[in-house]
Length: 507
Image (cartoon, rainbow, N blue to C red; front, side, top):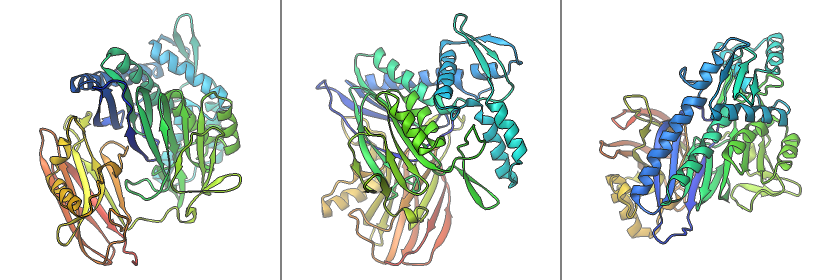
């Protein structure tokens, strides 16, 4: 599997179909390359979309069996097991990715290096032991990382192992896989007009499909957190975001990023979020990592030297930098300055929401990938009236909204609310990308209209329904304006665990 390195990217989609019969079909799976997978297909029929889903998953599996460093049976793992000086004839895919790695290592001056895996393991162990790394050991390892780790023979399509250091293709393989899957999905069927693939925050849009993508504040990674930075339209391109997000660790009370600079051996500190748009997901994927490691000036210089590629960088101080041709967008939480931009309320970046709900979807028994159930998280008042929908996970099959009717309690309540305020909230609900099955939802104490709720008794509800599976409902009563609390809710067949943390604030 490949680890998710991404901050939250919230998606909303619009489609301008070429064919009158074209429709949008959405598919969601967990534990695909170790993260969540969303596939949107613009197809002429449900059958064509279903076939595209099956073929896309099969192609992901095929490529993962080549590029994964976590699977001991993968082709990459076989290469890494070779003694120094030994050679191996490779598939065209692995050979191409290693060749791309060499190009990006050179272009970034070493800011990208697959051998950084050694440093990541060293810092991970330091976090577990809560002991700082010896400077001499760090210097020795960075010197080894800067050396050559393989030699490619283009004529024979083989590689020779030149070091014993572990290597990881996490920063490039996911984007590469997205590109290959997008291309093959469209080419295999004339009934498929366009696709959007999102694997753990790396996104590829191809064919006749346009996506409006909102990028969230890296300091507020939960669903429904009121900190969306901007939204922009993407078509026939890849987009990726890298940054510290929730993936940090502590040593002796100091928080560190999981991203390590291969040149210095230390966790990065300057950039907390780097979003890159490029013609391919592979380029966006690796450049997002590179821009997280390099300085702001060096990152902008590199991006400006690459055709049709743009970036948005956010520093630890909350300053936002954009490349000159960053697409026209709607900014939600950014204040314009003379020469740069800055995040609104950046001084309170780590402020907690009024309520934070974390839950985990029950994993499949075989530990493989599994379809995500329909899940709704919302708040009702003491009379059972739904005042705020926090998140809604859907599997939309055309031509009707059958998916949310399976969430019986939420659907009935939403219909009742619509009779009162005539406002449809379904399209406004976030569509998240997280680590497999693990989700975090934030609530700011407001209702669907944006008004602060009055003090009193309310109920948090988490409802889940799986196709050809079970129906489950969790409830937890609480007092708005009451005492802070942290509770664990009893798991069930669809939601294995859930915790609720409430931080009372003055209205």
